[in-house]
Image 1 (tube, helix red, strand yellow):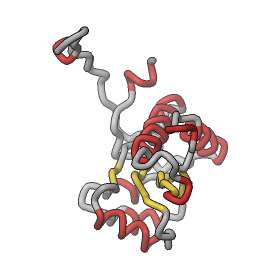
Image 2: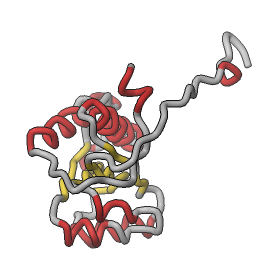
Image 3: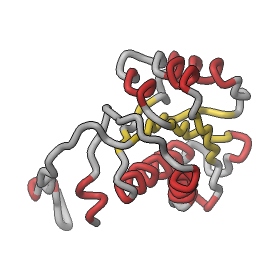
Image 4: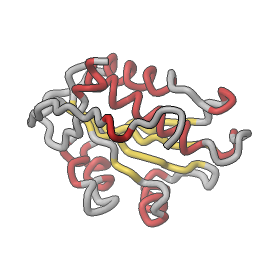
Length: 166
């Protein structure tokens, strides 16, 4: 619970490298997410090359931090594996959130950069990585050691909880 409560969107990173072992943990966390009917239709593109991170940061105006990350993970769905129609967004969102929680577990920083359903963003990433038509990129998670820190606010809001009826 501590990592869930402490997690913040981090957009500034140091130059400290992230080991392959830690990237492996992030991917293992992603693949441990729940998925509809256990179809696990996700795929991940891991990007470390600075020139590619720079291009990826041009995905849209709020993606500039990607160029400063040590690694970025693009979470994608393979629609050819889709059995439970339309559930891929939830599955890949759960995988994305698991990455963000594992980032916190490893004292790293990251932010969820949304791609889908913005077609211009999806197409930009498709072209950049030569993704097949059946692969839909949902999100990018740039990861690095944090160069900024935020307090942990209490976000629990009892007024948003309803028991038995509205």
